[in-house]
Image 1: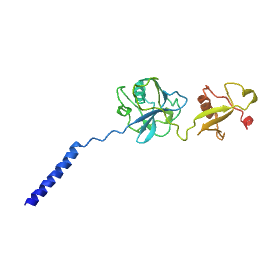
Image 2: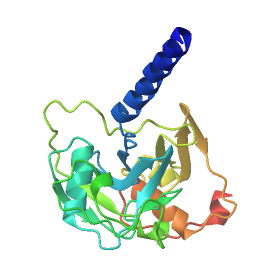
Image 3: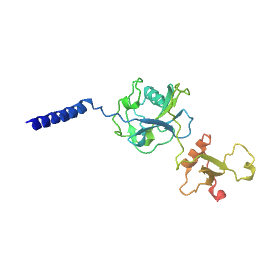
Image 4: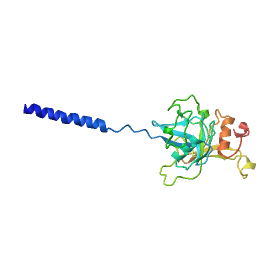
Length: 221
C-alpha cells in the first residue's frame, strides 16, 4: 500500500510538471523580416525594396502602394522617414519571389509584417511591377543594423567605357568604347553575343547618361 501510494504521488508530481510546462509555454516567435535597398541607378537611401522572409529575398509589388508603406520600410532600414516611392521597377527588375502585394500599412507599424496584404507570396505581379522607396537621408539615432548590401559573388563592382577611337581618347566624358566590368578586382570586356539596345541603355544609365546611341559593330570588330 505504501509503495502504491508513493507511485501515485510520483505520477502526480510528473503530471503536474507536464501541466506546468504546458501552461507556461511561450507562443512561437514571429519570424524576423529583413529589408534592403537594391537596383541601379540609385543612391544609398533609395532603390528597389527587397524583403527577406523564410530564408529568401524577394520584392514588393507596386499595386496600391502608398507613402505609408514607404515610411515603414524606410524606418525598418534605419531611416527616419520616407520622402517618396517608385513604381514599375524604376530601379530595375528584381529576382525571386514577389513576397507582398496590395501592401497597406497605416504608418504606425514597427514592421512590414504587421501591415495588411494579400499574404506572403500571394501575388499576381511580375518583377516589372517592383516597388521602390526613397528614404530621407537621415538616420534614426542609435539604429544598429545597416541597410548596406554586401557585394555578392555574381555582382559586378563597376562599369566603364574604354575608348578606342583616336579622337575620343582624350575627350571627357567618354561616351563610346568597349564596355568593361570590374569583377573580383579585375577589368574584363563583355561578349556581344545577343547584345541589343536595351543592354546599351542599362550601361549608359549606370554611367549617368540619359540614353544610348547605335554603335558601329563592324568598326569595333
